[in-house]
Amino acid sequence: MTAEQSRTVAVPPSPGVPALLDFEARQPWGSPAKEHAILVDLGMRPARYYQLLNAAIQTREALEHDPELTHRLLRLRATLIAQRATTRPTQETA
Image 1 (tube, rainbow, N blue to C red):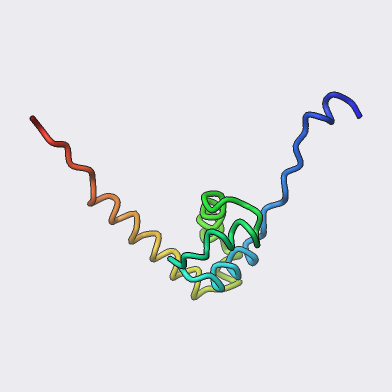
Image 2 (cartoon, helix red, strand yellow):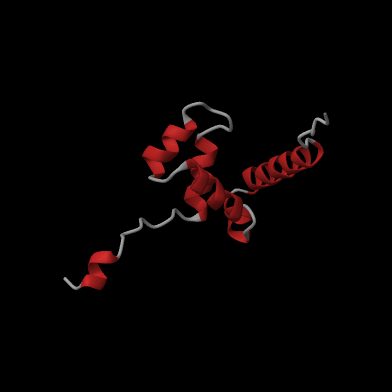
């Protein structure tokens, strides 16, 4: 084994769009056990899962695989973005 080969880290492949959507359909939003299931079933941290899911719902493949779930997730994302835009931290002045 060369020094270059010993420095490479094996990264598990990311699940595809259908796998992400199927997982999301099985694990309801806000479920307390969802983060644990992401770690155990998908082998990734929840933050990475949500990054991949966010990218996945923007694809044609997602719309073709599960249009109802994809549209629901897009609406949820739009609502959360709108809430963040209107809920800004207040600065207290002395």
